[in-house]
Length: 274
Image (cartoon, rainbow, N blue to C red; front, side):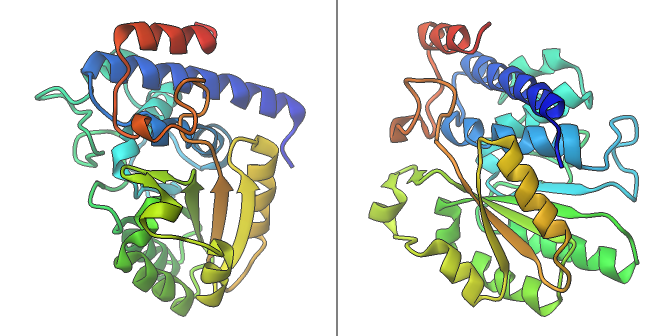
């Protein structure tokens, strides 16, 4: 069980990560703030509390793996990696620039700590299946974590991959859905409804849980249940707020893929205590 002291430390990491996200997007003048900010607590929890990783040995075979299936939220991954020590923080302001290692979607061949290049929505869970299955076949103890967007669930490949995970009993795999209810064209419900989302995953045979995606204790409790589940993969629906942490961005679809202007970045950073 996570301690109160650990929660306070993670809250500070989350604050720093949100500051990173705002600053890198403002510098690049492009990118996706909404879905990056909604996933901050999860990545802070994984990278600073849960995962077996070592920045000095980013490719160690026994490491836990993380796949950002919704690759357009790359800023949140880049922030987690730099705060964890995988690369120098000064690189963040080169986001999306030509020749920068930090492109609009993560590149595993250029960015230390990135386990899979992602960007084409719907493919991350399939890749996670392969990595988790390889771990089973090689009798390795690493775990695989993958984050999907709720709009991404409208891709058919996701549902094929869900069947595969259950078929191979990948209990070393945990998938998360960033359920912030907004995608580029509007609300999830208006574009293509995902009503009874938990029941859909349960019907595919997954151990399905829900958590508050902005509460470290709630995330911790769900992942502990996942680790204690044998013979089934676990999917955790994270109830989140798009643009979390910046008042004028929260629950606003227009901030899906719009970078803050200098004065907006200044306001956001002030709200975050910078």
